[in-house]
Length: 289
Image (cartoon, rainbow, N blue to C red):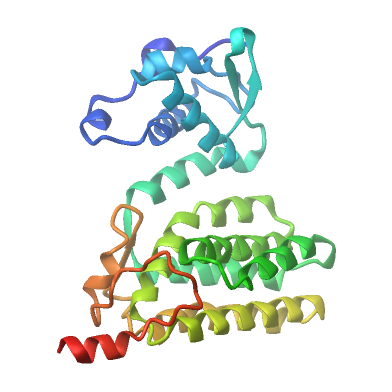
């Protein structure tokens, strides 16, 4: 199978000026080449060594970038000659929309209201269409069990939080819906992490999140899709209400996770401490007043 045009493969000059991460440069190139018809799904790409030369980065940096793209479901990696890596674009239809949307979400900032409404639309639609045979029971139960760990840090907790909601969307059995929701992963992670600095007591909030997750799964297991959809809507919307953040004013961006701190009361930045550590934010604010 033919290789993509070598002349078109180099990164645009402005991407280097902006110091764009290597995997995002490759993602942007893939998007452009797919749009222009120079690449097709399932096509073999240049080796990691050739891509490193094309993008003017080290081979190790390119390998790491390709691993990220593989984790995102955009390419599959195979062992090539001389310990090289052969990347191939995935053939799944959902992948054609995935790269462009993931690039857009990774490099843009959006009002919090837009992110929240997108979550509500995608998650409630998925739960209304949930099929018993498609519910990833083991995955959901496994994530909830990990979220119950007392030694879990904030970053781990919120990474699991997003994974739980991606698993919920899988219940509809629609791969395109899952791909679209997965593209929101970083945005959801960043804004939910930022909200931690605004809640009165994190230990109370984390306990509520766990309980609501169990209730949503319980409704799914009972076959009450309407209840499951209502519970997930309330779960999503209450997060920013509890934090006292106005979603019409706040913005969500992976480039600046502190953006939510500019709206409402200025809570301290989220740390990587365990959820069991109580953040008495209201007391701290009174003391600093």
